[in-house]
Image (spheres, rainbow, N blue to C red):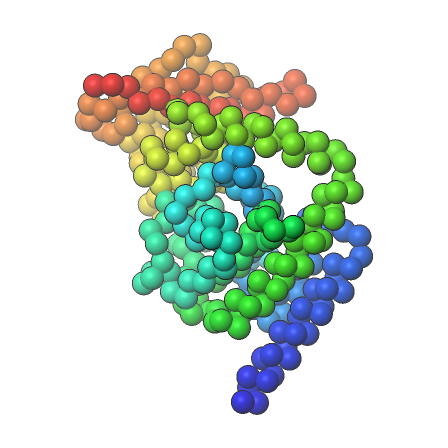
Length: 298
């Protein structure tokens, strides 16, 4: 009973600390950094990330993430069947105590400098004005790192984040206009029947659409597509990666193939794909590339 009371006081103190930290005007990134700092005092937050939910495009844009106290780039992906997507669809916090035993198969993950997947996870919906606007997730490489008390704490923090983030976005008119444009873009990309892969200037996969999730056996965002992580390839298989690598290398050099190219989905397989690629430009300079994969009839 004493231990339970101590834990309750500790978590109430954390909620009060988060409330005080978010009381002053902050931009979205500062809100999330403050939340991470306060949660780190009572929870294992080796991995922590925040994703903005885009309802028209049915996608999540991870705008901030932390791994071992290092901030990493984010990425965008369509909803699937994992805990992040379930937290959004069901508007209910998701707890995984031991991923290797009870967790669903992982089809999409983020690259880190540590191989392997987390064992414990809490994903809480961030709800404002009755609608899910994002998700707040904490993860640990230790099994059973979290319990129901921790779930309540993370959900309580997520509720405070909802107000703080919404306030920060409303005070930033430029961000607001960009978000509206992004909603239209995301809806268009989500409806595309072909698989869309977006690479940054270093050849890292940063965005996929729903068709790409269906086509690829697995996806690793934020990882150079020619570099596997723990024997998993960002584009699903080594065979497909090697087939697309000449195109990726052209895009990294600021060039793009002039015509559509056919590749094999797997070594020795009659299953063929076509690939169209184009450069992405920012302020007149190459900023990555876009590849569109289409399955060919056999």
